[in-house]
Each structure stands twice: as C-alpha cells, then as structure tokens.
Image (cartoon, each protein chain N blue to C red):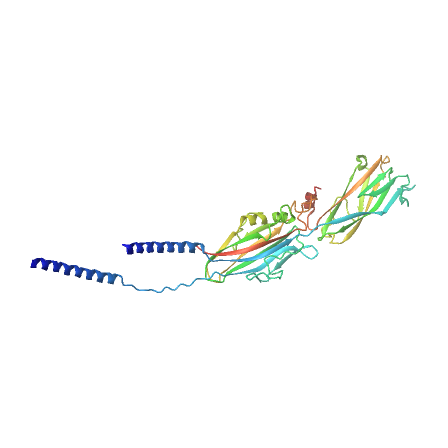
Length: 220
Length: 199
C-alpha cells in the first residue's frame, strides 16, 4: 500500500513538474517585443503650365494671322478671368483655317510617381443639329507626347475625343521632374465648313469645352 | 473550448479586416486633376447686294456706230431694260444696245470676304449674243484674295449688258439676266470656294 502511495505521489510530482515545464515554455514562447512602425503618406501634387502657344487665329479684323507666344502661363491654380489664363486663347472670330497648338509642361511637385493623361469634356453638351454640335464635329484635336509621338488618330474631332475619354500621355517617376506635351485644336479649311447655303453652317457658333490633365499614382 | 472558438473567430475577423484594408487601398489611389475651360466662337460671312435702279443708263449706237446714252428709259429702237429682284430684263433690243447699272455690295458679316458675281440668262438664243461685263472686277471670278472686302466695307461694280454689235438679228423676245453673288471667307482659295459652291 505504501508502495502504491509512493507511486501515486511520484506520478503527481512528475505531472506537476511537467506542468511547470510547459508553463515555463509557454512563458518563454509568448514573450514579445513591440516594434513601433512609422509610416508617412507621400503627396501627389502636380504643376501645369503652358510654355508655348503657336497658332493662326483671326485678328480684330477677322484676318488670319500666324503668331507664337513663348510667355509661360501657370495653369496650376484655379482659372481666373484673365483670357490668357488658359490652354488656348481663341478669340471671338474663329474661322476655318484657325488653329492653335499649346505646349504644356507638367511637373511632379510631390513625392509620388504618377501616370498622367488628358481628357476633353463639353462644358455643356451641344444641342443636336446646333451650330455648336456641327462645330464639335469639325474641330480637330491632336495630342502629342514629349517625344513627338502623336497619340490621337488622324482627323480626330472634338466630339470623338470627348466620346473616347482620357488619352494616356506619359509617366513621371522622379520628384521635380518635368515633361512637356502638346495639344492642338484646329478648325480646318475644308469642304463643308463654309456656308453652302443650306443653313447648316457653323458660322456664329460657340462651343465651350474643358481640358483636364489627370495624374494618378503609378501602380506598376 | 469557448476561448478557443472566440480566438478563432477573432483571428478570422482580423484576416477579413486586413483583406478589406488591402482591397480598399487598391482603389484609393492618389490622384489630382487640373482643368481649363476653352471656348471657340466662330465668326460669320454675310454679304448684302443691291442693284441701283437709278444708275441704269441705256446706250444705243448712233449713225457712226458709236454708243451714245439715250437719255431716256428706252433704247433708240424702242427696246427697254428694267431692273427688278436681282435681275435685268431686256426687251426688243437691237445690236449695239447696251444697259449699264451699278451693283453695290456690303460686307455685313464679321470677317473679311471674297465675292464672285455670276449670272444666268433665261433665253438660250441670247446666250451667244449678249455680252455681260463688269468694270472693277470679273464676272464669274473671285475677287482678289489680297484685297478682301472688310467687315462693313462696301464696293460698287458697274455692270453692262450689250447685244453684240455683230449680231445679225434683234433679240428675239425677252431676255432676263439673273445675277447671283457668292461670298466666302477671305483666306479661302478659289478651289475651296468653287468646291463649296459648286462653281
């Protein structure tokens, strides 16, 4: 009997020892170290400026005149009432043969690499069969990247590029890096542009559209 | 057992939250737009043209076959010329009879233009024997591209219609000459304008 007690006692002691060992192991394994991570978000900020504006536009007498404007116009902030504070400066007397080509400079003013694109939107969708709608079908738009690659199909009209959506232009990966690209809008001198007497003319028409340069963080 | 279940549920929720954060981050890309509104306004080409009926002067040949003003509203042989609705109508004229009159045009549009004066004759027999001419321009040709008609500017052309002296017979019946004036923007070429107007 004493032997049985001794065995039981020994077993209990062994079990207790095992528990102590396991607890100790668990205590060892569950030890932890806290690492404080520091994360700061980058900023995506762009600058946009018109650095050159070439074109052939009508002067105050309606005579087409070739011009080149090298004055730098910052387009980063909200548009002002200054008529020159714009990508294009078409006057009030645009006639077939008028065109303007703006060279725009985009700058990475933040710390995030980005892809950028340009899109055209109607300020107000022109009414069907209106002079503005016909004008949208006549105005030709060309987008050219900084390396001279034409990114739009030949004879792309304003109406078509609005329908098409944004045109990818390029990527900027380094802070303070700048790139240039060109936008051209032309009212060509071609058959059907002049008043042919049918009344379906683009004369005395007005059409407003937005040009939006969009930058999105580079994902690949 | 209950603790283990709770731990499992908590772990599962944590994984789901992490996944949600990852998915949410994918769509929350940084982006910025810069926009400008551009307006294109087109000009217009408009032309008004009018015959000056008071300027109508009739000439007939005298005995020396020299054209002389008749100083009346008829030709010497009794023929007449009248102006109405952009047309000149000749009646009973004889060889050498000539009518002269002024056509005044004004650019009432906003842009410089070029113009072209054309005419049609409703009497086929008269087409070969009537001479239609203009001083200060050319019939059927566009005005000079280097001298466009400016906005609000006027120009007067003197037009003459004559039954050719060599015609062997008086004009049979009436002949009405209808004039049409075309106008196009000043920088358009002759070819462009002819294409547009089908000239």
